[in-house]
Length: 435
Ligand code: ASP
Image (tube, rainbow, N blue to C red; front, side, top):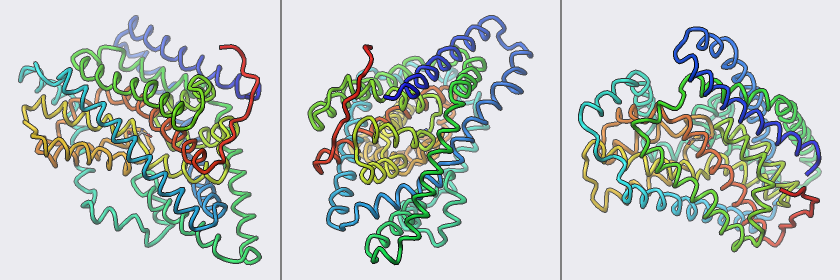
């Protein structure tokens, strides 16, 4: 890695650690003191939001240009079909594996049992208003068949306007068909458009690069706000549930992906994780696959050797559609809440949870908390009250940060897998400094 990236990755990590430690320390010292809340409200919180918004600002143009250029470059419809089918099969297979890990752990540790009714009521009451909002949003979302049909936007600009509120798949569909059309028209007719898209792509990357220069401070502010406000108490009663989700995520992140990278792609897991450090820290601190997409695109191409066309195709689609961590989280959460509310799920209902969790991973927007409305849908489809989401809202942010790391790591492993199957993965040799 270039010195610059290495220094940046280190600085982001330092920001992350400093934010977490100082937030926790001040929380321990000051508790609910007004001045600490003021520091967060008027200082660190807006600062963190500025960083996130600077990143988000470039996501839409990046996604549009990267995906349409990626498809246009893959060109040959047969190759496109192959790349698409492999991406789809990998997404489905690995998400299924993630959910299976989560479901097994819930059965083993049974985190939802042993709660008394008063404890459950207290958990429900503390976040009831937020939960109501999530449930209302979920109720507004369309039926599965309508959702499928509306992936095709009538008005691509409208889809772009609503991209972060659930229409990202519509934007992607538009970019895909534009790319496909470019590939099938003689180049002299589209050369102007291609040059325009390439310019847009380069500018988007530059915008992200500028935002990332601010990352160490932004990440510090995001993590500080979180820990200073919540401390660790919030984990308390839900410790076993949080532990099960985290254990599942860790098994997938450092077990399953290591095996996939080693045996499906033929790359050393050590090298993989080392080069992924910047991507993983960005995902963890932003809680957003979309905001991490640009960093993932750069690292996967420059440092892990995925060719640009496959990279653009798999990673941009993956940032919304391949969310292994989210799928695992959804499966665990639904089964946990079913246990908590004493709803017996027979085998068929459990199979439904698994399938819906995988699909929810596909439909979740890559933004903080993107999976919450879909959890409500899955909960209600198996007879658990949607308001139950209130129980887990308090700990969601830390779980969100963690599952986003998997979502993005999974995307990069998918890109490496597809590239290696296409015979075009060339991992560059770098003088990696000793760990
Ligand atoms: N924050 C996640 C992501 O961006 C989505 C979610 O699970 O809420 O990947």
